[in-house]
Amino acid sequence: MAKLKRWDFKQINRLHSKLLGLFISFVAIAALPLLVDSPYYVHLLIMVGMNSILAMTFILTLRTGFVSLANAAFWGVGAYALTLLVTRWDLSVWLALPASAVITGIVAFLVGIILVRNAGFAFLMLTALLGMVTVLVFGTFDVFGGYVGIVNIPAPEPIKLPFLPPIEFISKTPYYYLMVLLFIIVVAVLSTFYAAWSGRAWRAIDLSPHLAESLGINLFRYRLLAFVLASAVAGLMGGFYACYFGAVVPSTFDIFKTFYIHIYAILGGIGFAFLGPVIGSFIFTLVPEVLRITKEVEPIFTGLLLILLVMFLPDGLLSLLSLSRRPSHPGENMERIVRWIKASPRPRG
Amino acid sequence: MDLDVAESEILGLIGPNGAGKTTFFNVINGFLPPASGKVLFEGRDITGLKAHKIARLGVSRTFQATTLFMKISVLDNIFTGYHMSYKTSVWERLLRTPSALKEEERLKQEAMEIQKFMGLGPLKDEVAENLSHGHQRILGVCLALATHPKLLLLDEPLTGMNPVEIQTMVGLIKQIRSRGISIILVEHDIKAVMSLCDRIVVLNYGRKIAEGLPEEIRKNKKVVEAYLGKEES
Image 1 (cartoon, rainbow over the protein chains, first blue to last red):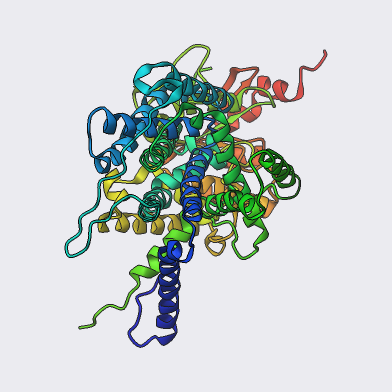
Image 2 (tube, rainbow over the protein chains, first blue to last red):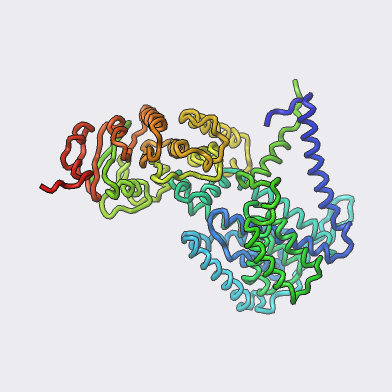
């Protein structure tokens, strides 16, 4: 992007209108809990945020040609990691949150070294196995609280800011803002990887693994990177879930949750690394609420949705918008944002 | 099967279909292990190394079937070829430090230059799958060049090209050689092989049946037999 000239009004207007757009959406997101009166709806928004991030992690491994069925398992690893750190070893929740991401990443690394070496179908089967084993492990050993799970997980400690009353995590609203913060962090981190050489390597592996290899791209290394990164992010969400919900039960992290995560991603459109998951999880979480679908009827809704999707919209909902074309590489939209943020007026002389 | 290639030499590899030419490339490249024997590159034994490691050592190839990153632009294709050329550290690239960004700019410039060198300049933003066949084959060679190879394996680069495209490609191959890159050329177009290659090796049923200068090969009885079949006397 050319340097912004002080007197180039057209460029300045464009930049200002874009900044304005960003600002407005920021304010809107920040103000949401205030506009929505019922804490139940705040809860739904939090779940939308969490589910969309989980869907993003699914797309990340998918981009390297591997379908993972262990998404919910790593979500669970993070949840249990935080739970044990806080309940057994009295670690502060604020430290346990990033720790849950790191621990899940390490577990993913150790598991991935074995799993990622395999071909796609074997990987699928092995991650399915991993998913089931994880739930089994959580349910069997007493240290994880067995099938009953662990309850009374403390909330994050209140944040003390100067001149302001401490932010206490009692109502759902502070959790909402925490989720927004985590969301921004995750999107920023993932975008950086996508926009850089790692993203190009992933794209190359996705489009033609043979060609990528002959260009010097180490398939195993980049697939492992995607797998570990995706799992660490899922683990972070797990940690959040544990301190938000206050309790963890093994059955939450079963393979059905993984299928739901896949649906959020597919519904939005797997061509879109960030927007797709958000839209997909938004619709899937909120539409049943709006339609007042009860828990008994919900599977019918899901099944119908899936059938319609596969038949009419295999590329997801976003493919309907001819405006939102698939970016030529995953980080492109973020790159654009970063680029024009950087092209701010510079002082002359 | 036993052959060597010297620096800056164009070695032709010909033989009837099924003779094993592409298989030979796959062995050198690292996609296939050899049934027996060794591959030595610059004095180093590279047999059995993984394909990406061999690429890092300076061996690059094109494929018999047009193999490109179809869904992305020409420039993006070539830029992907620069994957190995990064000198900045992983952290610098992730944090997008000025040095990392400068390097990306520099690599993009190099990609544009290779494009122009191969005559694809005006097409730089065109998606690869929209290119004509001839341009796609040329792009395939561009990709292989982006890795700064010392040895380039060209697998039937002239397939499906019209005479004009063939002339372009032949000229380009000569220019590649003048940059000091060794080339092993597999081709069926005998005219091109004769005009381009310094030496020729002929393969049949996985075995070398002749080796020598183009003129010698043209007259070699075994070669003629291999292509036309033994005459019943």
